[in-house]
Image 1 (spheres, rainbow, N blue to C red):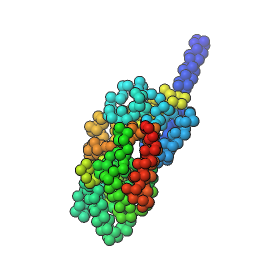
Image 2: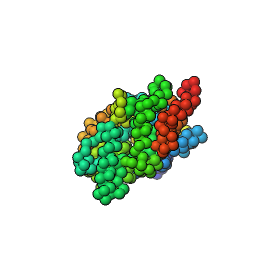
Image 3: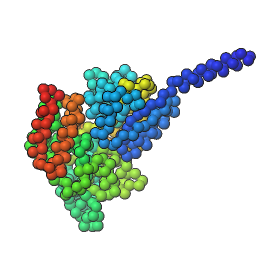
Image 4: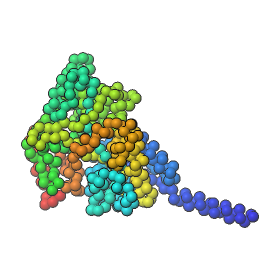
Length: 422
């Protein structure tokens, strides 16, 4: 009997040790804005409880340009401290060699996602990352102010400028000296590339570099689009907008000091928060169109994904984490709590999602207007392409040269960067 008790005790100890050995200490990097980090933590707590693993969140700057730079440094050094990277939709072609191929691990899940999103994360047949959520920006507008001034939601940028100016002037006369007509992301970073691509595409000015690799940015429609945006600075948009990223824009808007805002879906839930002065006073619509024969609404395709570093010492558990964060369960929670757009088509018909975020029905039209950034044709050179583009645009917005001059210089710089091929 004593021997049997001893044997059982030894077997139990071995089982506990084996279980402990299977648990992993993982690290994920994230540049989530707003309440994004807090939400991520709640989901990681679920994962930890289900798996026994521990996950540490390494916060990153909200600037996607800064994030990308840090990622490249870590990955180039073969950093083993980070297991899972939260990646922008445009980074797949540039970082594919540093991430594990998730094709086999995700074979039972990929069919749930929009095919275009899976395609965006597939490089040379290798699934680089699991989609977490997609993004397409909208025009946020104060419906109470439009009603007060008997105005319609603007369909063109020219209409937006006129409406924004009229309401801005009226509100300032009425006592709100801090009121502006329109805020957007005007800092010199990837966010400005997104905004400016929308302006250019909405005027029929192309996509900077076309799918076949042709450099198209130096054209009259693109010039008209950027000049129109430059006319907002100091009139309907504050001078400080030249330094705004997503959160600075949202800050002005959510305080009630702007009639219109261009931003991503995450700002919707925050704007309707219990402590928000504008809760219930706003709605969203597709971004305005430009002028010209090919004018249309355009919204830059965004979105974030979960990639596993090939240097992770716990690759199997890291893959489980990436699959979990891209799962229907987590995407549903994101849609309800963060108003992030799912990449899983079925969730757009989920009763719980639509009850918590009925505006998502409106976002379908916005998503249909989505325009990809030229990361596919420019491949590893995309980051340089984007930097040159946002710099030329920022110079124009700042009054350092005209759009025609700056886009002509941009074309020359892109031609030199391209060389014989991207």
